[in-house]
Amino acid sequence: MITPSKTIPFKDSIAFKMTYILDEEFEEISVVELYKKTKRKFLGLNEYIYALDVLYVLGRIDIDIELGKVKKC
Image 1 (cartoon, rainbow, N blue to C red):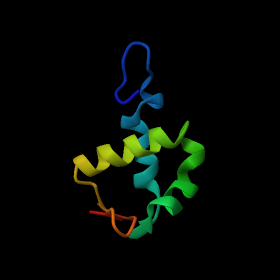
Image 2: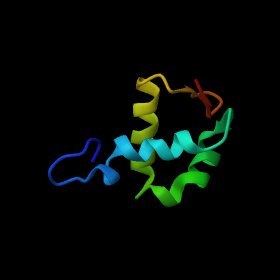
Image 3: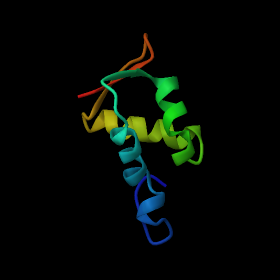
């Protein structure tokens, strides 16, 4: 699910789906608002959270947990 494999096509992997978040136009946005904008691209909330996690680890976004905000780096 996170990375493509023989049974998981690239388009269904989190590695691809995280691009939907990066394609959104925002400088800073709430986690909930970003999910509302992109939820049709994900199968569920768990995929969305995985995508946020991967983007955070890669240094592409910063997340303020106390404020619930996502900011592009």
